[in-house]
Length: 425
Image (tube, rainbow, N blue to C red):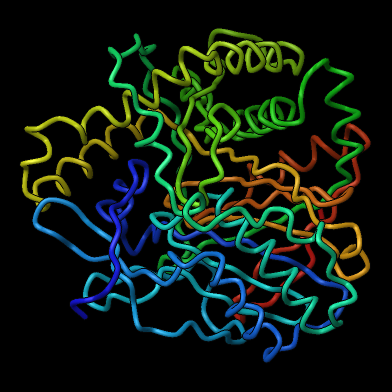
C-alpha cells in the first residue's frame, strides 16, 4: 500500500504502544444507552457517515525505525453485537488492524478506542456524532437540525496535532516532587479480566452537595474517593499518601478542536498518616491541590515538558526498541507515585431534539490497578469503576458515602456474558 496516507503520533500518544500489555490493553469504552433497542444495519450506516468526519479512525499503527506512525488501513470497520470482554485488546503489532470498534448490546452502543488514537474528549466527539447519525438513520431526517451537527469542525482541524502547535520550547518549569504512594492490591480476577461497576446518580444532587462544600463536582468526588480508599487501607500503610492521577483536558486552556490526544496529567492526594480523616479537611486539601496544579504557568510548563524530549536531537536518533524499553521503565517508576486514576470527562452535550431517544452515557477504561471515569448527560451522572481485583471495598465505600449524604445511586456491574447485572449497596 505504497500510496497510503500516514501520520505521526502526537506527543501524548507515544507512551501507549510501548506500555500496552495483556494486563492493560490501553483501551477505553464509551457507551450510549438509548431508550430503544439498537438496530445493526442503521448503526453500520451511521458509522460509515461518521468516518467521513473522522478519517484518521481508518488508520492502523505501524513500527518505524525511530518512532511509531499511523498508516491508512484498507480494513472496513464492521458493527457487531458485543461478543468480547470489555476493553479487549485492539492493538496487535503483527496485525495492523483498526484501533477502534463499534458494538452494541440491547439498548447500548459501545465505542472502544485504543488510547494512542485519541483521548476521552476526542472519542466522545466521535460517539456523539455516531449517535446523531444513528438516530437520523432510524427516525428520519426530521430529527436532525443544523444544531445537531454544530460541532462539525473542519476535518484538518480535527486531525491536527495541538501539542506541536502549542509547544514553545521554553525552559522547564520546576516540578514538585511526588512521594511514593499507597498502592491498592489484592487477589486479581482470572485471565486479565477487569470488573466494571457503574454507579448512576443525579447530577443536580451531586452539584448541590458540592456547592454546600464550596467546590466543584470533580473536587467533591475526588475527596469522596480518597476517603473510600483510606477506609480499606491497613493502618501500617498510612505512612504513604493516597495520590490520584487526574487527566487534564488541554482544550480548556488552549484553543483547539483536535479530536486526537490533547491532555496532560496532574497529581492530587492526601496524607492520612499526618492529617485528619474528616471530609472537610480532605476536600480543603484537594481544592488547594487543584488550584496549585492548574495555574496557567504549570499547564503550559507541563505541555513544554512533555514535548521537550521528542524535540531533542539525541532522543530522536535512539532506535525505537530502546525507546520502548525507556518508556516502559519510566512508566513503572511514575506508577509508584499513583494510587489510582480519576477522570471526569464532563457533560455530554447533545441536541435537545435527541432527548426522547437517549437515556445516558458512560465511560470506563482498561487498567492494571483501579480507575474511575465520570461523565454526565442531562441529570444522569455515571461513575464507571474498572479494576482487576476480586475485592470491591473501595467501590463500596465510595458509593456508601454518597448514599449517606442523601444522594441516590443505582449500581450495575458487568458479568461474563457481556451483559449487565444490578448490584445492591
